[in-house]
Image (cartoon, rainbow, N blue to C red; front, side, top):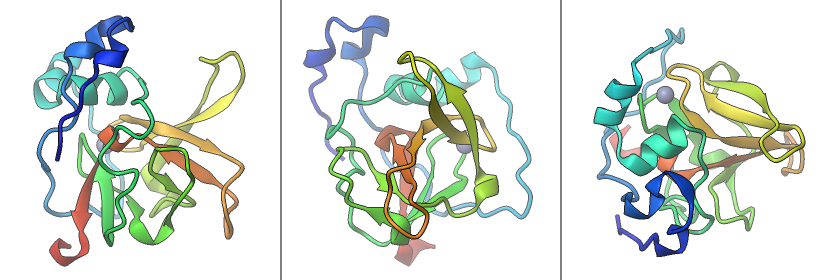
Length: 168
Ligand SMILES: [Zn+2]
């Protein structure tokens, strides 16, 4: 995984310019629990387990710059899991080219694995999407996706880890 310069974010808040992109892959297998049991950790605990960029997006609902993540253009077969807790979120079969520069899917692996909230950050309602187990922010879902669902799950690369099919 390559590091990239965040110098364009130098003026942004929270010191993003010093934050690294993505750490090495941490999950070798995807977790498909029958029942989602919430994982609750303190801010300090999350901060010790995540890179600063991961923390910014997953715990502070930040957004990575488009075309900067390591998964938007990933075409391999496999499973996209929560970067923070390893829960299986999206299968590569539902990934499609949205042109946005963020990894986009038309459906999650199981609806129970993702949670939704309404987000008014930009002044209008958007549907925020998070990991149903650890609450980590993933991105947003929009009603302009392809068939069969018509949905576009617009996710942050940094919120997810990719487990190639051979390792499942
Ligand atoms: Zn999670």
